[in-house]
Length: 636
Image (cartoon, rainbow, N blue to C red; front, side):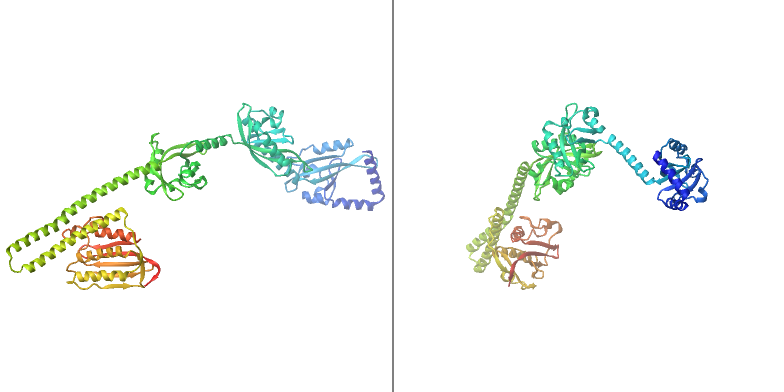
């Protein structure tokens, strides 16, 4: 301090001897970056530089003669701060301090102030020099840092996760309150032990290896699931994320991290694994919107679906459409608590290959307190073998019923169709016997007519037997198609000509054709049987009406054959059973027929991958339309 006094005195002497030098120093201080003011012993300003004027907004005239406290002190400024600084200076000290100051417009700033004494020739203090810097940005950063530190401290205190710091050797140096809440150890107990002391023995090496990976620079952080032993001896699972703490020289001096208690999660995963491994059947957890939240691995074995493919999907999308209503009713009853513990539901579930498998499921509706939402847990057992046996039994019963119905229909047919021609033949035979006994005139002509009648009735019986035999072959699967490319015009013309000869009393049928001719791939024998039956019906049920019309339309993928008559038509109520074995319409019971023609025709058309439809109106006529697929790359 003595050296400073002499220097100040020397400077004062220099100023008195050289006024130019004094002016030069004044100019330097006038534009200095710091605010500079000279005050007398009453703290009144005697000189101030431009930086101070610009900083506080006062003019030079407003500053001169005013006390510092009058201009820049305010409510948040310690009133005695300047006086304390002066007292320190008088004790031969240069003083630095910080305080809040106010500008002319009332705004606040923080000042970093240095107070230095100025000495006269007698080496006595007669003035003070104040140097001030605006440190408001620095103070704001400090305030923000302080607030951030408080928030961090509050967060660490109340966060449910463990926050810790350890040194390079694994010794814990700090933990938050969550450590005690989760594991039961106090902070004092914890800091007194090595970090490895708390790990489950089998996991110690895992923890060391993870820390070493940071030391070796193999990763910037690590995340592992690890077990620790709580104070009560229980095992606690922690999911731990850790990063290194670096020194100013960028060397690792420790580690810090966060550990989340995942014991419940691990336990739930174990339960799921146990369920998946040891329970036969499909287990799923659904949300209140019926979406899958969890499905057991057994779904893969039983349905082909991986768990990942089902999570988030609506479970109802996998049930058979015909079972949705029953499943909905079961679910609604479950929600209302109307389902008994042993009450189950059988339905079909869609597998990944598109087929359905039968399952028997039970479900329970419950509240999930962790998500505050409603859930349903579903357990399903495969029933495919049982259902296949049931379906086979039902099919056998249906076949038996069908067989009984066929037997009944056949007996009815035999009693009518066989009895009538046999009665006619018997009557004619008796009549012939009487005529032969009488040997009357015209016997030869009468014999010819009667033999014709007998022949017709025999043909009727033969046709009936042929139809029954064909139907039996189809039902047994004994029909084998001998397919080859066929021209439909070539097939239809002989059939039309044959019926024209048989029905000489009627006009000849005209065959209409439209489009570029194409071949079909079929068995000529059975297709001829189909169209013979259809044309026979057209003639049979349109006596006294215009001739039937036969049309062949060649389309892109099909050849469409239409046989249209203008006869009695088909009653609306009979149309659904039109292609049923032995069925005959209510309005043609007095017309001869077996009721097998259309049934056989439909079966043969479908064997050729074709379709047959009927368009009919009673008393106006019937149109039978057969569509057969074309033979690829074949033209005639």
